[in-house]
Image 1: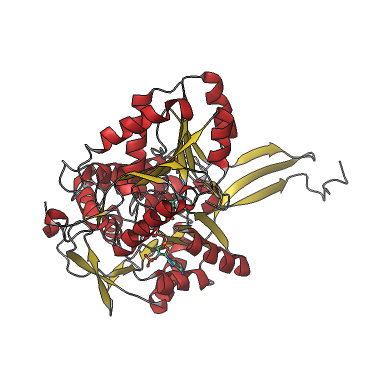
Image 2: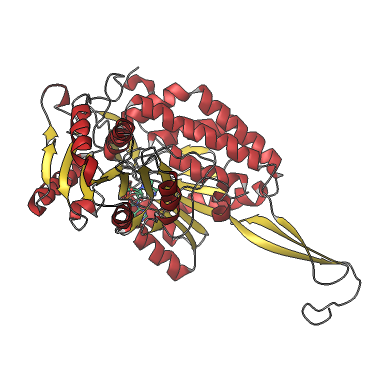
Length: 497
Ligand code: NAP
Protein backbone atom coordinates (compact mmCIF):
# COMPACT_ATOMS: atom_id res chain seq x y z
CA UNK A 1 0.00 0.00 0.00
CA UNK A 2 1.09 3.62 -0.39
CA UNK A 3 0.17 7.19 0.48
CA UNK A 4 -2.92 6.68 -1.68
CA UNK A 5 -4.40 4.95 1.35
CA UNK A 6 -5.58 8.39 2.40
CA UNK A 7 -8.00 10.03 -0.01
CA UNK A 8 -8.10 13.38 1.78
CA UNK A 9 -5.50 16.01 1.02
CA UNK A 10 -6.45 18.08 4.04
CA UNK A 11 -7.76 16.96 7.42
CA UNK A 12 -10.58 18.83 9.18
CA UNK A 13 -11.34 19.27 12.85
CA UNK A 14 -14.17 17.05 14.09
CA UNK A 15 -16.49 19.17 16.20
CA UNK A 16 -20.09 18.37 17.15
CA UNK A 17 -20.09 15.44 14.74
CA UNK A 18 -19.15 17.64 11.77
CA UNK A 19 -15.94 18.08 9.82
CA UNK A 20 -14.96 21.73 10.15
CA UNK A 21 -12.44 23.14 7.68
CA UNK A 22 -9.30 24.77 8.98
CA UNK A 23 -7.81 28.07 7.84
CA UNK A 24 -4.08 27.46 8.06
CA UNK A 25 -2.32 24.15 7.64
CA UNK A 26 1.01 22.37 7.89
CA UNK A 27 2.22 19.21 6.21
CA UNK A 28 2.36 15.87 7.93
CA UNK A 29 5.69 14.36 6.91
CA UNK A 30 6.45 10.66 6.54
CA UNK A 31 9.71 10.43 8.56
CA UNK A 32 10.87 7.49 6.46
CA UNK A 33 10.74 9.36 3.14
CA UNK A 34 10.50 13.06 3.98
CA UNK A 35 7.36 13.23 1.81
CA UNK A 36 4.21 15.08 2.75
CA UNK A 37 1.27 12.74 3.41
CA UNK A 38 -1.54 15.19 4.14
CA UNK A 39 -2.16 18.71 5.45
CA UNK A 40 -3.31 19.18 9.05
CA UNK A 41 -5.11 22.29 10.32
CA UNK A 42 -3.37 24.59 12.77
CA UNK A 43 -6.37 25.60 14.83
CA UNK A 44 -6.66 27.99 17.72
CA UNK A 45 -8.72 28.92 20.75
CA UNK A 46 -11.94 29.48 18.76
CA UNK A 47 -11.95 25.81 17.69
CA UNK A 48 -11.33 24.70 21.27
CA UNK A 49 -14.24 26.89 22.44
CA UNK A 50 -16.52 25.32 19.82
CA UNK A 51 -15.41 21.80 20.76
CA UNK A 52 -16.01 22.46 24.47
CA UNK A 53 -19.48 23.90 23.79
CA UNK A 54 -20.38 20.81 21.81
CA UNK A 55 -18.90 18.45 24.42
CA UNK A 56 -20.79 20.18 27.24
CA UNK A 57 -24.14 19.66 25.52
CA UNK A 58 -23.34 16.09 24.52
CA UNK A 59 -22.04 15.10 27.94
CA UNK A 60 -25.34 15.83 29.73
CA UNK A 61 -27.19 13.34 27.54
CA UNK A 62 -24.36 10.85 27.24
CA UNK A 63 -24.08 10.56 31.03
CA UNK A 64 -27.75 9.50 31.13
CA UNK A 65 -27.27 6.69 28.61
CA UNK A 66 -26.95 3.49 30.69
CA UNK A 67 -23.30 2.42 30.74
CA UNK A 68 -24.03 -1.01 29.18
CA UNK A 69 -25.58 0.86 26.23
CA UNK A 70 -22.59 3.19 26.00
CA UNK A 71 -20.58 -0.02 25.87
CA UNK A 72 -22.51 -1.29 22.83
CA UNK A 73 -21.10 1.67 20.87
CA UNK A 74 -17.61 1.06 22.21
CA UNK A 75 -17.82 -2.59 21.13
CA UNK A 76 -18.67 -1.35 17.63
CA UNK A 77 -15.70 1.03 17.72
CA UNK A 78 -13.46 -1.93 18.65
CA UNK A 79 -14.97 -4.09 15.90
CA UNK A 80 -14.40 -1.40 13.26
CA UNK A 81 -10.82 -0.92 14.42
CA UNK A 82 -10.32 -4.67 14.11
CA UNK A 83 -11.81 -4.71 10.62
CA UNK A 84 -9.46 -1.87 9.59
CA UNK A 85 -6.43 -3.04 11.51
CA UNK A 86 -4.12 -3.33 8.49
CA UNK A 87 -5.15 0.05 7.05
CA UNK A 88 -4.66 1.73 10.41
CA UNK A 89 -1.29 0.05 10.93
CA UNK A 90 -0.02 1.15 7.51
CA UNK A 91 -1.12 4.74 8.04
CA UNK A 92 0.39 4.70 11.51
CA UNK A 93 3.72 3.54 10.13
CA UNK A 94 3.56 6.26 7.48
CA UNK A 95 2.97 9.09 9.94
CA UNK A 96 5.08 7.83 12.83
CA UNK A 97 7.77 5.68 11.22
CA UNK A 98 7.62 2.62 13.50
CA UNK A 99 8.02 -0.66 11.64
CA UNK A 100 4.80 -2.21 10.40
CA UNK A 101 4.88 -5.13 12.82
CA UNK A 102 4.92 -2.65 15.70
CA UNK A 103 2.26 -0.56 13.94
CA UNK A 104 -0.02 -3.61 13.94
CA UNK A 105 0.79 -4.24 17.58
CA UNK A 106 -0.09 -0.68 18.51
CA UNK A 107 -3.44 -0.82 16.70
CA UNK A 108 -4.14 -4.12 18.48
CA UNK A 109 -3.55 -2.33 21.78
CA UNK A 110 -6.29 0.14 20.85
CA UNK A 111 -8.65 -2.71 19.88
CA UNK A 112 -7.94 -4.51 23.16
CA UNK A 113 -8.66 -1.34 25.09
CA UNK A 114 -11.97 -0.81 23.30
CA UNK A 115 -13.21 -4.30 24.18
CA UNK A 116 -11.83 -4.17 27.71
CA UNK A 117 -13.43 -0.82 28.51
CA UNK A 118 -16.68 -1.85 26.83
CA UNK A 119 -16.72 -4.70 29.36
CA UNK A 120 -16.45 -2.08 32.10
CA UNK A 121 -19.83 -0.80 30.90
CA UNK A 122 -21.35 -3.68 32.85
CA UNK A 123 -19.10 -3.19 35.88
CA UNK A 124 -17.96 0.36 36.73
CA UNK A 125 -18.03 -1.01 40.25
CA UNK A 126 -18.62 1.14 43.27
CA UNK A 127 -18.95 -0.23 46.80
CA UNK A 128 -21.78 -1.01 49.15
CA UNK A 129 -20.95 -0.97 52.81
CA UNK A 130 -22.82 -1.17 56.12
CA UNK A 131 -23.87 2.18 57.54
CA UNK A 132 -23.15 2.86 61.20
CA UNK A 133 -26.81 3.68 61.95
CA UNK A 134 -29.84 1.45 61.80
CA UNK A 135 -32.17 1.73 58.78
CA UNK A 136 -29.56 3.50 56.75
CA UNK A 137 -27.90 2.38 53.51
CA UNK A 138 -24.45 3.48 52.32
CA UNK A 139 -22.73 3.12 48.98
CA UNK A 140 -20.17 4.80 46.76
CA UNK A 141 -20.71 5.23 43.03
CA UNK A 142 -18.61 6.53 40.16
CA UNK A 143 -19.78 9.76 38.50
CA UNK A 144 -18.34 11.22 35.28
CA UNK A 145 -16.03 14.21 35.61
CA UNK A 146 -17.74 16.12 32.74
CA UNK A 147 -15.86 17.48 29.73
CA UNK A 148 -12.33 16.10 29.70
CA UNK A 149 -9.32 17.20 27.64
CA UNK A 150 -6.95 14.60 26.22
CA UNK A 151 -3.52 15.62 24.92
CA UNK A 152 -1.47 12.86 23.28
CA UNK A 153 2.11 12.46 21.96
CA UNK A 154 3.31 11.31 18.54
CA UNK A 155 5.05 8.11 19.59
CA UNK A 156 1.86 6.05 20.22
CA UNK A 157 -0.80 7.97 18.30
CA UNK A 158 -3.57 5.40 18.59
CA UNK A 159 -2.74 3.35 21.70
CA UNK A 160 -2.41 6.26 24.11
CA UNK A 161 -5.53 7.96 22.74
CA UNK A 162 -7.40 4.68 23.32
CA UNK A 163 -6.05 4.32 26.87
CA UNK A 164 -7.55 7.72 27.63
CA UNK A 165 -10.64 8.22 25.46
CA UNK A 166 -12.25 4.78 25.98
CA UNK A 167 -12.33 4.88 29.79
CA UNK A 168 -13.45 8.52 29.49
CA UNK A 169 -16.48 7.76 27.37
CA UNK A 170 -17.52 4.53 29.08
CA UNK A 171 -17.68 6.52 32.32
CA UNK A 172 -20.03 9.09 30.75
CA UNK A 173 -17.63 11.94 29.98
CA UNK A 174 -17.34 13.88 26.74
CA UNK A 175 -13.91 14.43 25.23
CA UNK A 176 -11.92 17.15 23.50
CA UNK A 177 -8.86 15.44 22.02
CA UNK A 178 -5.76 17.20 20.74
CA UNK A 179 -3.48 14.73 18.95
CA UNK A 180 0.21 15.49 18.41
CA UNK A 181 0.77 17.73 15.39
CA UNK A 182 3.25 15.21 13.94
CA UNK A 183 0.71 12.34 13.94
CA UNK A 184 -2.90 13.45 13.34
CA UNK A 185 -3.87 10.71 10.87
CA UNK A 186 -4.84 8.14 13.49
CA UNK A 187 -7.19 10.71 15.02
CA UNK A 188 -8.75 11.35 11.63
CA UNK A 189 -9.27 7.63 11.03
CA UNK A 190 -10.83 7.32 14.47
CA UNK A 191 -13.34 10.11 13.77
CA UNK A 192 -14.67 8.04 10.85
CA UNK A 193 -14.94 5.04 13.16
CA UNK A 194 -16.78 7.03 15.88
CA UNK A 195 -19.32 8.17 13.28
CA UNK A 196 -19.88 4.72 11.84
CA UNK A 197 -20.18 3.17 15.28
CA UNK A 198 -22.95 5.65 16.12
CA UNK A 199 -21.17 7.64 18.82
CA UNK A 200 -23.48 10.64 19.41
CA UNK A 201 -22.16 13.95 18.08
CA UNK A 202 -20.07 15.90 20.53
CA UNK A 203 -19.07 12.94 22.71
CA UNK A 204 -15.59 13.01 21.16
CA UNK A 205 -14.33 16.14 19.41
CA UNK A 206 -10.92 16.34 17.73
CA UNK A 207 -9.06 19.63 17.39
CA UNK A 208 -5.74 19.71 15.52
CA UNK A 209 -3.09 22.33 16.16
CA UNK A 210 0.04 23.06 18.09
CA UNK A 211 0.45 22.45 21.79
CA UNK A 212 1.12 26.13 22.33
CA UNK A 213 -2.20 27.10 20.71
CA UNK A 214 -4.76 24.27 20.99
CA UNK A 215 -3.21 22.45 23.97
CA UNK A 216 -2.74 25.65 25.92
CA UNK A 217 -6.30 26.79 25.17
CA UNK A 218 -7.60 23.46 26.48
CA UNK A 219 -5.57 23.69 29.66
CA UNK A 220 -6.86 27.21 30.31
CA UNK A 221 -10.50 26.49 29.38
CA UNK A 222 -12.73 26.49 32.46
CA UNK A 223 -15.26 24.23 30.70
CA UNK A 224 -12.69 21.41 30.67
CA UNK A 225 -12.66 19.75 34.09
CA UNK A 226 -9.75 17.38 33.62
CA UNK A 227 -6.62 17.23 31.50
CA UNK A 228 -5.16 13.80 30.77
CA UNK A 229 -1.72 14.35 29.25
CA UNK A 230 1.03 12.11 27.94
CA UNK A 231 4.25 13.67 26.72
CA UNK A 232 7.48 15.23 27.88
CA UNK A 233 8.27 16.34 31.41
CA UNK A 234 8.73 20.00 30.55
CA UNK A 235 5.29 20.25 28.95
CA UNK A 236 3.67 18.13 31.66
CA UNK A 237 5.11 20.24 34.45
CA UNK A 238 3.77 23.45 32.88
CA UNK A 239 0.34 21.90 32.37
CA UNK A 240 0.28 20.67 35.96
CA UNK A 241 1.14 24.13 37.32
CA UNK A 242 -1.67 25.76 35.39
CA UNK A 243 -4.13 23.01 36.34
CA UNK A 244 -3.01 23.39 39.96
CA UNK A 245 -3.74 27.11 39.82
CA UNK A 246 -7.25 26.37 38.55
CA UNK A 247 -7.73 23.33 40.84
CA UNK A 248 -8.36 21.31 37.69
CA UNK A 249 -7.85 17.56 37.85
CA UNK A 250 -4.74 16.54 35.89
CA UNK A 251 -3.28 13.16 35.02
CA UNK A 252 0.29 13.07 33.67
CA UNK A 253 2.28 10.28 32.02
CA UNK A 254 5.76 11.47 31.07
CA UNK A 255 9.31 10.36 30.35
CA UNK A 256 11.42 7.41 31.41
CA UNK A 257 15.04 6.31 31.79
CA UNK A 258 14.42 2.61 31.87
CA UNK A 259 16.99 -0.05 32.62
CA UNK A 260 17.45 -3.74 32.00
CA UNK A 261 19.45 -5.41 34.79
CA UNK A 262 21.45 -8.48 33.77
CA UNK A 263 22.68 -10.55 36.70
CA UNK A 264 25.57 -13.06 36.64
CA UNK A 265 23.09 -15.99 36.60
CA UNK A 266 20.99 -14.62 33.71
CA UNK A 267 20.16 -16.41 30.49
CA UNK A 268 22.41 -14.14 28.41
CA UNK A 269 20.86 -15.02 25.04
CA UNK A 270 17.39 -14.16 26.34
CA UNK A 271 18.71 -10.94 27.87
CA UNK A 272 20.26 -9.91 24.54
CA UNK A 273 16.94 -10.44 22.76
CA UNK A 274 15.11 -8.44 25.43
CA UNK A 275 17.63 -5.59 25.27
CA UNK A 276 17.56 -5.31 21.47
CA UNK A 277 13.76 -5.30 21.36
CA UNK A 278 13.43 -2.75 24.17
CA UNK A 279 16.30 -0.47 23.13
CA UNK A 280 15.83 -0.29 19.38
CA UNK A 281 12.12 -1.01 18.84
CA UNK A 282 10.28 2.15 17.72
CA UNK A 283 13.85 3.46 17.20
CA UNK A 284 14.14 3.89 20.97
CA UNK A 285 11.28 6.40 20.96
CA UNK A 286 9.13 4.62 23.51
CA UNK A 287 8.57 6.00 26.98
CA UNK A 288 9.46 2.49 28.19
CA UNK A 289 12.53 2.12 25.93
CA UNK A 290 15.58 0.55 27.54
CA UNK A 291 18.34 3.14 27.49
CA UNK A 292 20.49 1.67 30.28
CA UNK A 293 21.78 -1.85 30.73
CA UNK A 294 22.99 -2.47 34.27
CA UNK A 295 25.18 -5.54 34.03
CA UNK A 296 26.99 -7.65 36.62
CA UNK A 297 30.74 -7.28 36.04
CA UNK A 298 31.20 -11.06 35.69
CA UNK A 299 29.07 -11.21 32.52
CA UNK A 300 29.74 -7.74 31.12
CA UNK A 301 32.19 -8.80 28.41
CA UNK A 302 30.05 -11.71 27.28
CA UNK A 303 26.91 -9.55 27.12
CA UNK A 304 28.66 -6.71 25.32
CA UNK A 305 30.02 -9.09 22.67
CA UNK A 306 26.63 -10.73 22.02
CA UNK A 307 24.75 -7.40 21.85
CA UNK A 308 27.28 -6.12 19.32
CA UNK A 309 26.96 -9.27 17.19
CA UNK A 310 23.17 -9.06 17.16
CA UNK A 311 23.14 -5.31 16.43
CA UNK A 312 24.85 -6.02 13.13
CA UNK A 313 21.71 -7.87 11.99
CA UNK A 314 19.40 -4.88 12.51
CA UNK A 315 18.16 -3.63 9.14
CA UNK A 316 17.24 0.05 9.16
CA UNK A 317 14.82 1.71 6.79
CA UNK A 318 11.22 2.47 5.89
CA UNK A 319 8.97 0.66 8.36
CA UNK A 320 6.53 -0.30 5.59
CA UNK A 321 9.16 -2.72 4.30
CA UNK A 322 8.67 -5.88 6.40
CA UNK A 323 12.42 -6.59 6.16
CA UNK A 324 13.35 -3.57 8.25
CA UNK A 325 13.69 -3.96 11.98
CA UNK A 326 14.34 -0.32 12.90
CA UNK A 327 12.50 2.65 11.38
CA UNK A 328 13.33 6.37 11.27
CA UNK A 329 13.41 9.03 13.97
CA UNK A 330 10.29 11.21 14.05
CA UNK A 331 11.86 14.45 12.74
CA UNK A 332 15.00 16.56 12.49
CA UNK A 333 14.61 17.94 16.02
CA UNK A 334 14.57 14.36 17.33
CA UNK A 335 17.71 13.54 15.34
CA UNK A 336 19.51 16.65 16.57
CA UNK A 337 18.73 15.80 20.18
CA UNK A 338 20.14 12.28 19.76
CA UNK A 339 23.31 13.63 18.08
CA UNK A 340 23.75 16.07 20.96
CA UNK A 341 23.65 13.20 23.48
CA UNK A 342 26.22 11.19 21.50
CA UNK A 343 28.65 14.09 21.92
CA UNK A 344 27.73 14.42 25.60
CA UNK A 345 28.37 10.68 26.12
CA UNK A 346 31.76 10.82 24.41
CA UNK A 347 32.69 13.94 26.36
CA UNK A 348 31.76 12.26 29.63
CA UNK A 349 34.14 9.38 28.89
CA UNK A 350 31.71 6.62 27.90
CA UNK A 351 33.16 4.35 25.21
CA UNK A 352 31.23 4.29 21.92
CA UNK A 353 31.20 0.66 20.72
CA UNK A 354 28.75 0.87 17.85
CA UNK A 355 26.65 3.44 15.94
CA UNK A 356 26.58 7.05 17.05
CA UNK A 357 25.87 8.55 13.62
CA UNK A 358 23.03 9.64 11.35
CA UNK A 359 22.45 7.36 8.37
CA UNK A 360 22.21 9.22 5.07
CA UNK A 361 22.47 8.51 1.36
CA UNK A 362 20.63 6.08 -0.91
CA UNK A 363 17.27 4.95 0.42
CA UNK A 364 17.94 6.81 3.68
CA UNK A 365 18.61 10.14 1.99
CA UNK A 366 15.26 11.81 2.57
CA UNK A 367 14.25 10.30 5.90
CA UNK A 368 15.57 10.79 9.44
CA UNK A 369 17.65 7.73 10.32
CA UNK A 370 20.04 7.12 13.18
CA UNK A 371 22.23 4.06 13.66
CA UNK A 372 21.47 1.88 16.71
CA UNK A 373 24.10 2.89 19.23
CA UNK A 374 25.89 1.16 22.10
CA UNK A 375 27.98 2.92 24.72
CA UNK A 376 29.92 0.98 27.32
CA UNK A 377 31.81 1.88 30.51
CA UNK A 378 29.14 4.42 31.35
CA UNK A 379 28.72 5.39 34.98
CA UNK A 380 25.51 6.09 36.84
CA UNK A 381 26.25 9.80 37.17
CA UNK A 382 26.75 10.54 33.47
CA UNK A 383 24.06 12.56 31.72
CA UNK A 384 23.58 9.77 29.15
CA UNK A 385 22.73 7.50 32.11
CA UNK A 386 20.23 9.90 33.66
CA UNK A 387 18.49 11.93 30.94
CA UNK A 388 15.90 10.75 28.41
CA UNK A 389 17.51 10.63 24.94
CA UNK A 390 14.49 9.23 23.06
CA UNK A 391 16.45 7.47 20.36
CA UNK A 392 18.17 4.13 19.65
CA UNK A 393 20.96 4.68 22.17
CA UNK A 394 21.78 2.34 25.04
CA UNK A 395 24.55 2.57 27.65
CA UNK A 396 26.11 -0.27 29.63
CA UNK A 397 26.85 0.35 33.30
CA UNK A 398 28.80 -2.33 35.15
CA UNK A 399 27.97 -3.22 38.79
CA UNK A 400 29.42 -5.59 41.37
CA UNK A 401 26.25 -6.87 43.06
CA UNK A 402 22.48 -7.23 42.97
CA UNK A 403 22.13 -4.51 45.60
CA UNK A 404 24.22 -2.09 43.55
CA UNK A 405 22.13 -2.89 40.45
CA UNK A 406 18.92 -1.94 42.27
CA UNK A 407 20.53 1.24 43.60
CA UNK A 408 21.71 2.29 40.11
CA UNK A 409 18.30 1.51 38.62
CA UNK A 410 16.58 3.68 41.22
CA UNK A 411 19.11 6.51 41.04
CA UNK A 412 17.30 8.50 38.34
CA UNK A 413 14.50 11.02 38.57
CA UNK A 414 12.19 8.88 36.39
CA UNK A 415 10.30 5.75 37.48
CA UNK A 416 8.48 4.17 34.55
CA UNK A 417 9.75 0.69 33.72
CA UNK A 418 12.51 -1.68 34.81
CA UNK A 419 13.56 -5.23 34.06
CA UNK A 420 15.76 -7.91 35.57
CA UNK A 421 17.20 -11.03 34.01
CA UNK A 422 18.07 -13.63 36.66
CA UNK A 423 17.44 -17.29 37.42
CA UNK A 424 17.32 -16.72 41.19
CA UNK A 425 13.77 -16.68 42.56
CA UNK A 426 14.87 -14.81 45.67
CA UNK A 427 16.34 -12.03 43.56
CA UNK A 428 13.16 -11.92 41.48
CA UNK A 429 10.97 -11.23 44.50
CA UNK A 430 13.41 -8.78 46.06
CA UNK A 431 13.68 -6.93 42.75
CA UNK A 432 9.92 -6.60 42.21
CA UNK A 433 9.73 -5.18 45.74
CA UNK A 434 12.70 -2.82 45.53
CA UNK A 435 12.67 -1.53 41.94
CA UNK A 436 11.15 1.92 42.21
CA UNK A 437 9.18 1.95 38.94
CA UNK A 438 5.50 1.65 38.02
CA UNK A 439 6.22 -1.38 35.81
CA UNK A 440 8.65 -4.25 36.53
CA UNK A 441 9.51 -7.07 34.11
CA UNK A 442 11.29 -10.29 35.03
CA UNK A 443 13.21 -12.09 32.28
CA UNK A 444 11.70 -9.77 29.66
CA UNK A 445 12.73 -6.33 28.35
CA UNK A 446 11.32 -3.01 29.56
CA UNK A 447 8.45 -2.86 27.04
CA UNK A 448 5.34 -4.95 26.52
CA UNK A 449 2.57 -3.58 28.72
CA UNK A 450 -0.86 -5.22 28.55
CA UNK A 451 -3.91 -2.97 28.58
CA UNK A 452 -5.73 -4.51 31.56
CA UNK A 453 -2.90 -3.61 33.95
CA UNK A 454 -2.17 -0.09 35.18
CA UNK A 455 0.35 1.80 33.05
CA UNK A 456 2.41 4.64 34.45
CA UNK A 457 5.33 5.55 36.60
CA UNK A 458 6.59 6.79 39.91
CA UNK A 459 8.69 9.88 40.72
CA UNK A 460 9.22 12.27 37.78
CA UNK A 461 7.35 10.05 35.32
CA UNK A 462 3.91 11.01 36.53
CA UNK A 463 1.73 12.46 39.23
CA UNK A 464 0.32 9.31 40.75
CA UNK A 465 -2.34 8.44 38.18
CA UNK A 466 -2.36 5.50 35.79
CA UNK A 467 -3.47 5.03 32.19
CA UNK A 468 -5.15 1.75 31.17
CA UNK A 469 -6.23 -0.98 33.56
CA UNK A 470 -9.28 -0.50 35.74
CA UNK A 471 -7.23 2.23 37.43
CA UNK A 472 -7.84 4.50 34.41
CA UNK A 473 -11.42 4.78 35.62
CA UNK A 474 -10.17 6.56 38.74
CA UNK A 475 -8.87 9.33 36.48
CA UNK A 476 -12.10 9.71 34.54
CA UNK A 477 -14.59 9.43 37.42
CA UNK A 478 -15.35 11.23 40.63
CA UNK A 479 -16.28 9.14 43.66
CA UNK A 480 -19.66 9.97 45.11
CA UNK A 481 -20.72 8.69 48.55
CA UNK A 482 -24.48 8.13 48.82
CA UNK A 483 -26.36 7.68 52.14
CA UNK A 484 -30.01 6.66 52.12
CA UNK A 485 -31.70 6.98 55.50
CA UNK A 486 -34.94 5.00 55.63
CA UNK A 487 -35.54 5.36 59.39
CA UNK A 488 -37.99 8.23 58.93
CA UNK A 489 -36.21 10.32 61.55
CA UNK A 490 -33.08 12.44 61.81
CA UNK A 491 -30.15 10.14 62.64
CA UNK A 492 -26.89 11.92 63.33
CA UNK A 493 -23.70 10.09 62.36
CA UNK A 494 -21.13 9.74 65.15
CA UNK A 495 -23.72 10.99 67.69
CA UNK A 496 -26.90 8.88 67.60
CA UNK A 497 -25.34 5.43 67.46
P1 NAP B 1 5.49 16.79 24.05
O1 NAP B 1 6.31 17.64 23.18
O2 NAP B 1 5.39 17.15 25.49
O3 NAP B 1 4.04 16.75 23.38
C1 NAP B 1 3.00 15.96 23.89
C2 NAP B 1 1.68 16.61 23.53
O4 NAP B 1 1.57 17.86 24.25
C3 NAP B 1 1.55 16.96 22.06
O5 NAP B 1 0.22 16.81 21.64
C4 NAP B 1 1.94 18.44 22.05
O6 NAP B 1 1.47 19.17 20.95
C5 NAP B 1 1.30 18.91 23.34
N1 NAP B 1 1.83 20.16 23.87
C6 NAP B 1 3.04 20.74 23.61
N2 NAP B 1 3.14 21.92 24.27
C7 NAP B 1 1.96 22.09 24.95
C8 NAP B 1 1.45 23.12 25.79
N3 NAP B 1 2.16 24.20 26.09
N4 NAP B 1 0.22 22.97 26.32
C9 NAP B 1 -0.51 21.86 26.06
N5 NAP B 1 -0.09 20.87 25.24
C10 NAP B 1 1.14 20.97 24.70
O7 NAP B 1 5.98 15.28 24.00
P2 NAP B 1 6.29 14.40 22.70
O8 NAP B 1 7.63 14.79 22.20
O9 NAP B 1 5.14 14.43 21.77
O10 NAP B 1 6.34 12.93 23.32
C11 NAP B 1 7.51 12.32 23.80
C12 NAP B 1 7.50 12.28 25.31
O11 NAP B 1 6.34 11.59 25.75
C13 NAP B 1 8.67 11.52 25.88
O12 NAP B 1 9.18 12.20 26.99
C14 NAP B 1 8.05 10.18 26.30
O13 NAP B 1 8.75 9.51 27.30
C15 NAP B 1 6.70 10.63 26.73
N6 NAP B 1 5.75 9.51 26.75
C16 NAP B 1 5.32 9.04 27.96
C17 NAP B 1 4.45 7.96 28.02
C18 NAP B 1 3.96 7.44 29.35
O14 NAP B 1 2.91 6.80 29.36
N7 NAP B 1 4.66 7.66 30.44
C19 NAP B 1 4.02 7.37 26.84
C20 NAP B 1 4.49 7.88 25.62
C21 NAP B 1 5.34 8.97 25.59
P3 NAP B 1 2.37 19.31 19.61
O15 NAP B 1 2.29 18.02 18.96
O16 NAP B 1 1.72 20.38 18.84
O17 NAP B 1 3.74 19.65 20.04
